[in-house]
View 1 (tube, protein in one colour):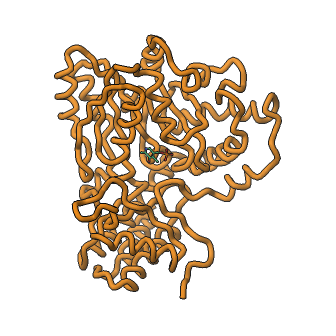
View 2 (cartoon, helix red, strand yellow):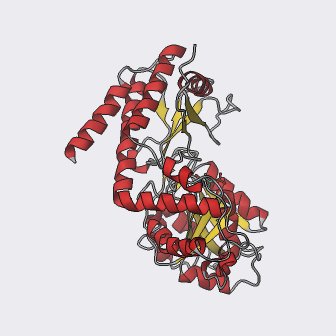
View 3 (cartoon, protein in one colour):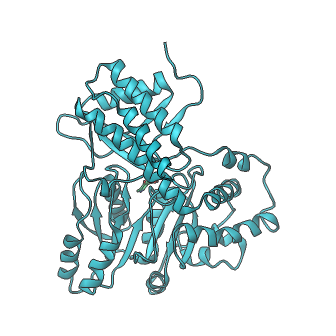
Amino acid sequence: MSLANGRTYLAIPGPSVMPDAVLRAMHRASPNIYEGALTDMVAGMIPELKKVARTDGHVAIYIANGHGAWEASLSNVVAEGETVLVAATGRFGHGWAEMAAGLGIETQVIEFGTKSPLDAARIAEALAADTAHKIKAVLVNHVDTASSVRNDVASVRAALDEVGHPALLMVDCIASLGCDEYHMDAWGADVTLTGSQKGLMVPPGLSFVFFNDRAAAQRAAMKRVSRYWDWTPRADPQFFYQYFGGTAPAHHLYGLRAALDMIGEEGLEAIWARHATLARAIWAAADVWGQGGPLTMNISDPAHRSHAVTALRLGAPYGAKLREWTDTMGGLTLGIGLGMSEPGDPGGTGFFRIGHMGHINAHMVLGALGVIEAGFGSLGLPHGKGGVTAASEVIGSALAAG
Ligand SMILES: *Cc1c(COP(=O)(O)O)cnc(C)c1O
């Protein structure tokens, strides 16, 4: 028997759940891409996008996934042979560094492991040692989606300022924008990137690179920038097609319009609070489960946990077994472990991740936790009883407090 039929729930850290309003907005004939409603709509979305990143800077849109945003951002401000300093707190830090290496950029990686946030003091040390100012940018993941750690971006800005180092601060917010509190300008980021398929609730295919005037000046000093990745015409187009370096991704844009309407209606502060409360509910369940079995949350300090994704350790091969069970028996797809393998577990089968980003609410999270708890029972995995009850208490008391 299976109980998976019914509406399935893709609870992975991207792509996230697409709202019906987004899907409906995309379901239409292709519009005129030369003039009219579409061109007006895009111009109107630019200030709204900047508000989501909390910046008065510029934004370039790319027809690309997050990997494209990684390459786009680097291509504009770091030349072949120049150096970037990468704070790696999980697989996604290394992924961005690999993208840089592929562009012929020297990468200096500070490894913080897969269970800890970055330590700005170590970044300050590396910057202080770079007296020749070879480092052109510091690359930080606000949230590393593999480890589910949330890093303190402002502490890296403070490190740069303390040392007096001119490198740009570039922040990957692909897993956090529209989920976790983020203030690009106030926290001193020069470049911020995100994708459409996580907090923005749109299918994968669009990405966004926000940049300030300091970053624009570094771009202007580059000897050459690949024509396609160049953010200058995209952020300040003379012709509509320049926003996208070619044909507009019309259907994604309609989806994005609907998503921005939803974000505007709920309000960014309310969205951050919703994600924070639902995350706390998940952690409460995991705490209880861990009291009677091997489950642990990958990031022990709640202050450094993402509000959009939670990485959990269950021991090989039970992460994989649980994911298979929830998918086939409960209609719930959980995320795989990424870059977390331990000796003797080359497939990373001891891990799983819960994606809780974007279009999610109390019943979805409680439902997901209920299916996970049922899976523990069905598979005979030792676990503390009452995880779902603990989660519902977090949600109940948060709502009672208003
Ligand atoms: C998802 C993600 C990426 C990669 O995005 P893709 O769309 O899969 O290319 C990069 N960084 C972070 C933090 C992410 O969460």
